[in-house]
Image: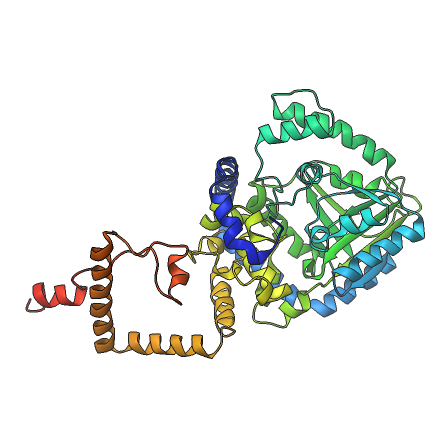
Length: 470
């Protein structure tokens, strides 16, 4: 099924029946969430650090336009180039123009969600430019002609056996039982790509405005090879990744790896702010920073601005019972899970992703896991409210009648007695122990959920009978 947020219910239904997917999700999410809890508990005061990280991101959002201009000035002063992209099409065009200017034909790319967001690889392929993903998870996704299913762990939806079969088919790997041997074969294959690439691409985990520095964090070393070896480096970064100072970075770099992979620090932290200087033996000859908006300004001007504080750690996905059950592809978007259920409709239109705000139990596990304390449940409720307003006058009238009935004790009690008699009469006539269907518009509930029978005796009646005198 094509990636489409509107297909969430159908995709989730298929995912629930996929035993292999369920096995992969159970292992992946439980392991990641368990490691996060363990390393966060090592801190003297985890909550204080989270609050410090939250305020760092909120300060950045408060001064976002000024910080972006400061970033641009510093990158240019360092010898780099800055390009602004209002949407995905403009971002793709900037990158294609760079490739044509420097006659670039072979690229290597470290992990980047924003390049996935702007659908860059198909555009490069159509222009005759070969781009290879070098993050192992993204490389597997590319070989399988698939989509990432997790913000941090792109192939959480695949088992080791599936990856083995893919490598044997696509990159001529001999049969290997151990994951380390499979990884070694992929590393050997990718090494040739690094050596032959004429440009490299990256995203950016952070942009530090005070020095014009882009930071990426990786565990495989591919980020360093993608950005340091080829003669041209193009960094494609969402405008919300900006932070003011290195002090803010020092806070957030303690939170990101702990929340994302359960590490105290990632194996590699790479920083770059321009091309190589005259006295530097390594680094690109040209550096381009493409700053991508693509709906972020709309979020910035809305009540959902806090969603832009996300540091893309994926902790809310691992903690979410819905994501744990249906996986990332069900969301039909680059950004899945609880934060994706906000980001996707807020950035690209509520009508295009209307099922996603309802893909939550509102249990609050996402907020508890978020390293910067984003209030995801409240924003999901607000999105549901906004979507309800688009249902038309009949829906609005029905909701007002429902609210009126529930706010008046006599009407509430009468409604309960009536519903109890009707539902029990129906079940007696059909021999059912629950209601399989309700008439419209209530059938929206029974399409996806069980509807248990009303109690034959209400709590109010039981209280009057047994407790009121006492």
